[in-house]
Amino acid sequence: MLSFISRRLVVALPTLLVVIAGSFFLMRAAPGGPFDADAQLEPEVIENLRAAYDLDKPVTEQFLLYMARLLRGDFGPSITYADYTVSELLAIGLPVSVKLGLTAIVVALLFGCLMGIISALNRNRWIDYVTMSIAMTGFAVPAFVVAPVLTLVFGLYLKLLPISGWNDGALQNMVLPVIALALPQIAILSRLTRGSMLEVMRQNYIRTARAKGLPEYKVVAGHALKAVSLPLVSYLGPAIAGIMTGSVIIEQIFGLPGMGRYFIQGALNRDYPLVMGTVIVYATAIILLNLLADVIYGYLDPRVRRE
Image 1 (cartoon, one colour):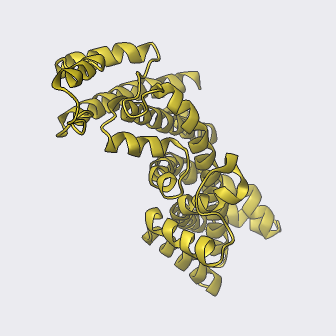
Image 2 (tube, helix red, strand yellow):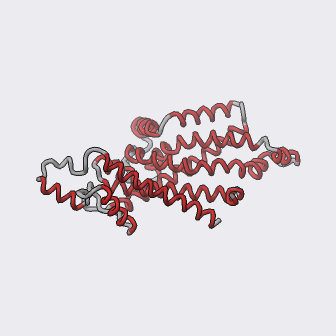
Image 3 (spheres, rainbow, N blue to C red):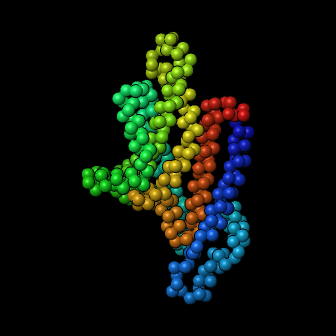
């Protein structure tokens, strides 16, 4: 297993480097800069500010200086939030984003798998049509459309839940953003679980288990679920990536103090260090979570480790 993880890490590190380099040079290539809006400042002051952030140097030299600081764990100072470093801002926003994202993933797995199993065991019955219709609706409507609708219905009209704020992660403040994040993944996971379950239930070992007189719940729980979990585990990487990237918009809509808010504010104000810091954290999290999904898949299917 250690050799398996090492091979994945060998691939992951160059991927992260490509993400960092691509993000760095693309931001510099975009028109404008972080101090273009400060037209009231004297040209000498603007030049001093550019020099303080190494923006007066060639782009290649800027990248090498940034990578040298990054290897020391220094993301640099924020341009927008002058009294904070990027590391301090990420330390504030990361716990919020992690709690929101992990909760959404757990909710998506729970409800998506449950809907898929129920639908597969009741194939071509009314409950199958209802669950798959709900899944198709959740898949077709993006999270940035679902979030305002949830805000209007449950926040403004029914006044059941708060529409913004974090309140130290209180349950009532998490309900709407978690639902908005989890709904598209619930739709995908339910259809994936249904298709996998239908295929597994036609296998010979399932027929043998039924022929031995095992109850249906033991056939499903004891024999079918492990095989069904393999495609679900392989999808965990893209699902986590979808939830993490979707949280950028959801945090802004619901006014949550997560990394998404800092990313958007940094992008709007051309805060290069802040945008780079959030991109690196998001990319690292996605790579590590994909690695975790590969490890779990390798544990469930030893053929992957041998390959």
